[in-house]
Length: 239
Image (cartoon, rainbow, N blue to C red; front, side):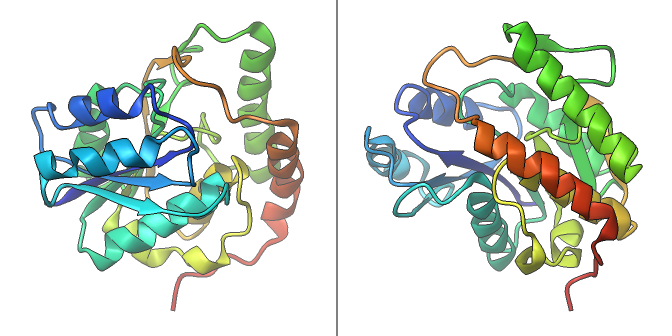
């Protein structure tokens, strides 16, 4: 079973090399695909310099300019399908998602789940070092999503997810409309609406130690208003 981790990057020079080291030290084999949006700090150069150490397993796609989190993942998903991966993971580069948890997500996926979410909100609130304002915004965003969509996912905005090949082949990736963090909600909602089996694994989310958060008011606004439209959208499988 081929497993691929997709990590979008923008100015992650402090985190990229430690993340590469961590991924390739895991007891299970994972390939790694970096989608870099023209980081001016040299993130892409670090990845390319280290590729010979992990020949055939460390990959990079470079894009010009910040094109959005959602489009980065969609680019990675299509690349993964073209290269015959069985399980495709998405996660952040800043260690807010613990790479050790990848194996737990994979284990649940092998038990018949099409989408497995690394969830902060199954057992209370498992978030470390967030200011209260951001914690409340994130928690109630998921409450809002559940209320509007009726989707039974506790952490709808989570960015730590495992998709089976079946899930990505079923979803119409070209029909995904939201580009920022709303993308995470739309993908889970579309999978659920199409009858794919969605599960959650409890994780602890830790705020980044290096680099800067990419969250903005515009990103939050897109997600807030985009969710309102989801129940009225026609969700169809890819033809």
